[in-house]
Amino acid sequence: MSEAQAQAPEKPKNSGMIFQIVFAVVNLAVMGVGIYMVYASTMGWESPKITEEQVEREIASTPSAADAGPLIYTMDKFTVNLGGEPKRTIRLEVNLQMLGKDGFEEVMEPENRAKARDKIVRILNDEAFGNLESIQGKLFLKDKIAMEVNSILHKGVVKDVYFSDFVVQ
Image (cartoon, rainbow, N blue to C red; front, side, top):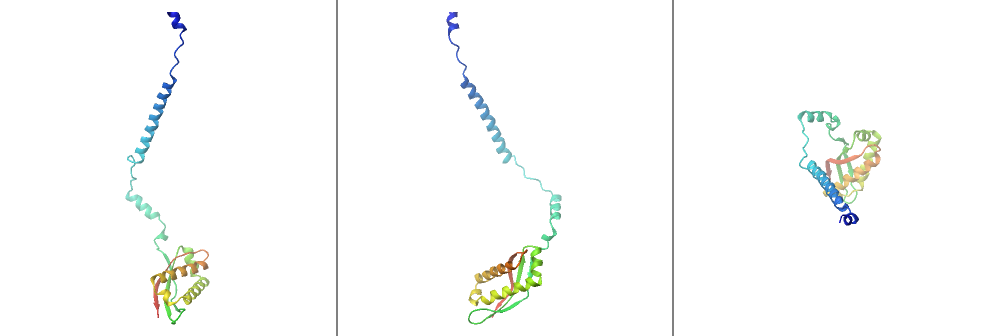
């Protein structure tokens, strides 16, 4: 019988079983890394500790321009005839909120100030009382004034327009 056993072909090694074991080990390693990442990004996360000293340093390092508040240029009062019938006049004071210091200085230049006043007078001459009677009309007027003044300026930008006096007679 020993000759029969010697002649019998050897059983091939089960390579499929080796691949399954390697796949299972790699799969467990990937799952372990995934679980750690979820833990580290959710439950393991700690909020940074903020001390009073850090807050004081942060406040001190902010630029002082922010403390100055918004840059608002107040124009002289306007008294203008409105368009349309019956003839009415409007008296208003326009305040321009500028986006930066450069724009504030630019709008204060005599040439730009005169151009801005002229543009605003032309806008008001074209408006009728019925258009300015409602809140929507006043908001539309603000937008028109901001667009016209922005068309004059090269460096500055008008962020908003405020009316501190608005009387129609």
